[in-house]
Length: 400
Image 1 (tube, rainbow, N blue to C red):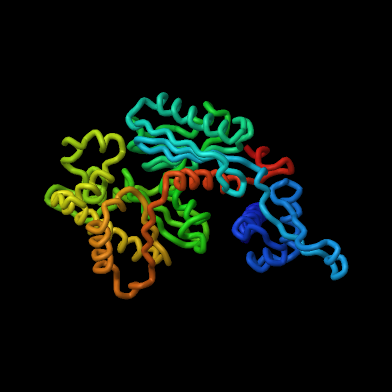
Image 2 (tube, rainbow, N blue to C red):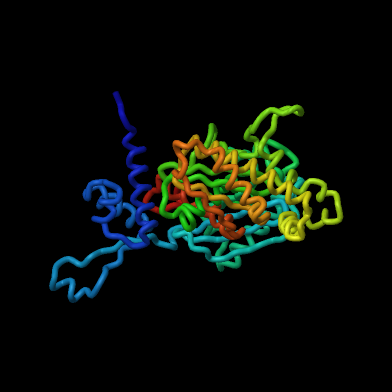
């Protein structure tokens, strides 16, 4: 019986070597072999191919004259920052944030456009994103034909493999083939990914999960998102589907199904404020900052809403930890601005709901990441696609 596809195994080994070099920054071949548990012969063959493709660089460590007296000099390998350049973007209801990054994931330029895009026609949203991408590329002193890939991070349910947006609060329509739309406009391969998945990879590469290959991220933004990382890879559903955590069922009440979003979503928390004197602030995406101000002023209605939302999130987290038992759960998003009423009720509900058998297994981390970090996470999605591509001798662009 055939146990493995040789081409697939070569691609996996190649990715593991490349990712090991990325994590280390600078590393010798023998250290790659020890880290990946690949033979030194296999590592030598893969790194020779990566050098030929221009994806990594070799640097001799120490003084060459001293090395000549002692024997062969120590050769360190590192990523070639000029091997590829990508654009990552966070597309939210009231703002768009773009970054251009090199092959190491280092940011070359950033651009933030504070404008409302939700519920606009698809063509208008596409126009605005195209303009943002082009402006950010120019700010990096590059031309669009020097960009290898673009990744757009959107809230909602996204099919990563096809680029279809099944549903998103950004769009009026459902089932939008947005990856194709933007690829044709830009003339650059474009990936559409859930914003929760993007920020998950950002934390894995640069943030609170850099030391982990297994973790869970919960995004508490306009929509409630979930990212699950296992063995260094994102877990996606059928067709590469992302997860809408807001659809999680917490129970059945007199009015029917009780979903997490109905208790902990932004609309549920802000409630009647959306139609009151602060409606304009909410429309401009400053609803949670406004809620924080009212909570500090002891607005009992919003304090109760924040406590109710925290309790619901705590129960949801306990269910997630019961299923996956990750070493760390990272919580991000605008709802963290609600402060102690929200956070204290979340922690208490989580502590009460978590099974005694796994109490203490998972660390909860609360992180208020910037929009630029979310966009950088989208750039990481694009870079990982390039890392995993079966490049030929002319480098990553040849596979696109």
